[in-house]
Every structure is written in structure tokens, then in C-alpha cells.
Length: 553
Figure (cartoon, rainbow, N blue to C red):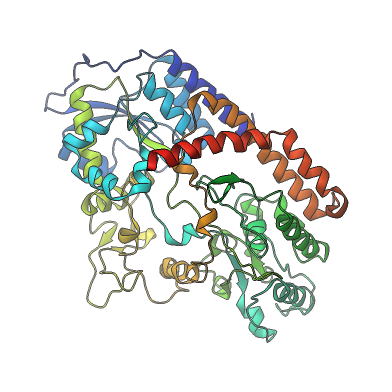
């Protein structure tokens, strides 16, 4: 079964079971208690192979602090099977008291949240938060984006999303280029589209790795991590990133009008430029077919350094950090390119992963609900975030010492992560617990000054991102994570998006590789967008955006 088909079936399953729900929470549910006075809470969560949630250090800590006896129903970090297990539980009616999920594994969608909430399976959280969770309430009151993400159109909070802010992730469309090769060839970091062409040609023809072979690959990436089109397109048009869920968006704003850039003349010029690089052999054909393992194999080739540049989020995607020959230190970020008309956009990512991850169900007793929301509220404190996400002090992190410098050098250092190889397994909840992982919190971690040291990676990414900040066009940014679609249109919308994503992805690839002639077939391709539902897609999102705008007044 394909991932997209599996996702569609999962959505259908949750909408079906929600329609058959009880229609109201089970307020009469008696709390199941242990002999030592703990409330039993059945929890479904993903876990990696090295994590035993029942024996986990944080589990034991939370159990003691909040008098909860966790009864875990673990799934997997493999998104397909994890979602399938979640959906089987819902369809059978044998679902847990609490879904405690990870957004990029098995988080609920907006459509799923609305159906499960309105049909009584998901318990509204807003009153619990007001009565028992002051830290969550403060976050909602001070973070407008979080509040809009969390609050359904009917005013209820049926599930909480995570908030894991990441400065370098907010600007994902980077190009990492071999600056050692630039130095050897006496060339400057490229600033324009034609500068880049010149550099890539030199990488291809002037043997910068010095082995006497024409084996250099000027630019390469892999399918799942690629920012190739986005980075290069920024010199011609704004390429929207989307809602931080791994799928590029088709949506932008022109004032208050929802539009798409993919049928604009500027987009066509961007594709023509990318095709010209491909035609000259400057972009590796494998960029559009190979997986992450294949890209790593090229980047780590023991015989020679082969990669001249790679458009990905961070260099560890294509080369092993801490390589014995130091090759990983050769790569630096290139700035956003300036195109022939002076444009130099970069993509703007939603600041945190979307997907709804903390959902209490009508199976839970009132006692379980109160203790669970109190636990989540603790995670919203710096102390709780460190404990739940990272693990105990002295095991996963230590307090800063004299002379330690925070990632943001203007910030007061708060914690110093220990080297990953020194941290025992099963000592943290990790990605399950990133609920108030704000920029302030993240940027207060101690990071070495040496950006090329393995432990200095965060600073390397932080410093590189400064070149991109300011090149985003926020006026064109469509706030997809905050715009709730009418549940009655969710199925239609999912079909439209799948069809449009496939059409655009396949069309762009055909133009880049030359399978389609962009000079003679562009107009027909643009007309074909209508055939796969572009007008209807924009119409539905326009309605949703108008409602969002009205609610924001």
C-alpha cells in the first residue's frame, strides 16, 4: 500500500468512527486507581526500538510526581503502522484515555480533530486548562499562532499541538557548498544565478578534489530532503514552504487573495533556469530518484570527496559529521541567490511541526483528565521541558559553567546538553514532550564556539541561517496551520491536494529533465491545473482564509 493511500484510508477510518461516536464524553466513568493511590491512564504513544515507556526514567518521574499509573499502548516511529494502529483502536472502540503522539509520526490532522471533537470522542480541554494548567494558559494567551492552531472554529480546544521552535528550520531552503573547492579554484561564494552556474561548471571540469578523475558531482540531493527547486526558484519567484509537515505548499497570498505561484511566468523562468543547469550536467540526475542512504553513500565515498553542493536543510544529511578526513567541515551555506530581475527570496517555514498530539478521550475519568493536564502543564515550564524532553540533570544535561556561551550569545545560558554517546538509553521522552520548546528555550542551550565541531552543529546552523533571514516575503506567507478547513470539505480537499501535488511534482520534474519542452508545453500544462481542481482548491482555501480573517478581528 502506498503512503498516500494509507493516509487516505486512515483519514477515512477516523472520520467514520467519529461519525459513529457516542456524541458526548462519558462523564460517569469511574477512575481506576492503584493501591498506592495513583490514577490509571491508558496512553497510546509511539516509541523507538530503544525505548521502553514503562521503564523510562521520565515515565517513573511523572508517575511519582502526578500520581499517574501509565498503562502504555506503544506503537512505532514508522508513521504508516503507527497511524494504522491508532485508527484500528478508534474503529474498534477500544481506544485509550490519552493519545500522546509525535507530530511527524502520527499526529492528528485538523479534520480528524474536528470530527473526533464534535462527535464526543475528544474531550474539550479549554476548561481543564483554565482550572488546572496556568502555564498552558499563559502560552495560549501570549502565543497567538499557538492559540489559533489549537482552537477549532467552534471555540473548543480538542487537542493540543506541540510547539518546538527552531530558528534554522524556519528557513529550510539552504544550499551547502564545498568552500574548500572554492578556495582551491580561487573562486568566491556565488551570489547570483550566473555565479552559481560558473562555480558548478568549475566543480565539474577543473578537478577540485585533485584525484585526476572527472568524478565530481557539482550538485546533488535526495528526494525526501531536497530543497533543490525551492532554493533555485527563490531567485525568480516565492516558493511557499507550507505547514512544516514535509510537503511543499501550493498556496501564497496576494493581499487577502489566496493564490498559487506555480502557474506564474516567473515560475516558468525559474524552471527554465533549473533545466539549463540540468542540461549542462551540473545537477545530478539522481537528485530526483535517490534516497537518503544513497546520498550519504556519495557524500561519504572513501575514495574521494565527490559532492560540490547539496540543497538540503543541514550538511549531516549528505555527509557524516565528524568524518575522519574532515570533509564535513568543507561545507558552508551559500546565501539566497539573486536572479536576473533582482529577486532573492527564501522560503519561510511554519515555526513548529503541525499535527495534534495531546488528546484526552471520553474513555478517561475526570481524575485522569485532571492529572494528565497537570502533567502537560508541568512540561510547559522550563524545568518540566528539560526533564521530559531531555531527561534528568546530570544524566542528559548539566548546568552552565563560567565561560559557557548560549547558542544565541545575547541569551543567558540555561543548560548544557551532554554528548549523545554519554547519555544512557531510555532516559527521556524526547520528541513526545516538545510542548513549550520556544526559541528562547532552544537558544539558551550551551553550544561550543567552534561551528565545525560536532558539538557545535547548532551554532553552525544558527550562524548560517542569519544569511537567509530577511529574504522571506511574509506578505505572501499563507498561514496554513492556523486556517481550519470546514470539516464537510475535508475529504474533497484531501483528494484535491493529492491530485494537485502529484500533477505539479511530475510536471516540474518533466520540465527540469527535458521530458517536457517548457517553451512549447507550458501553456498546456498550466491549463491542465484546472483539470485536477486548482480553481476549486483555491476557492475552498479562500473561504477558510476569509473565515480565519473574520475570526481574527
